[in-house]
Length: 141
Image (cartoon, rainbow, N blue to C red):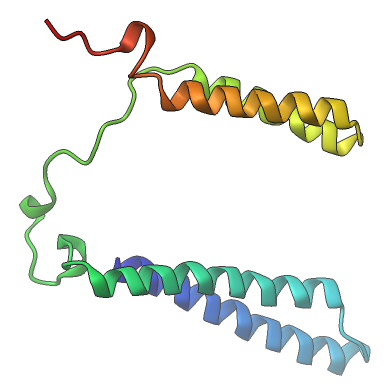
């Protein structure tokens, strides 16, 4: 996790440095600061800082992973990383439901937003319980 923390924290620092440079440069050349870009750079640095500090705190609480150690061998990182569903149609349903919810927000249609939100809840539940009920359930003999 130390690698991830460094990436996020260094990127946050660079966003803040770019914001300072941007603000000084705009004020010097144009006499005023363009606030949308300046605020976007500061807030982007803040969001990156939140993620980076989370990874930094987690890296202090867990044992170093092979990618965090300079003396690690490639074979130490070999093995199973987790379970990934080989073929699920639920993510397509989630995307469609999110599209309905987004259209409801864009066109200020509360009924469409409600339908989209309910569809999101239904499809996320389907994805979550895909391997516990239905055709993909593990059969115990």
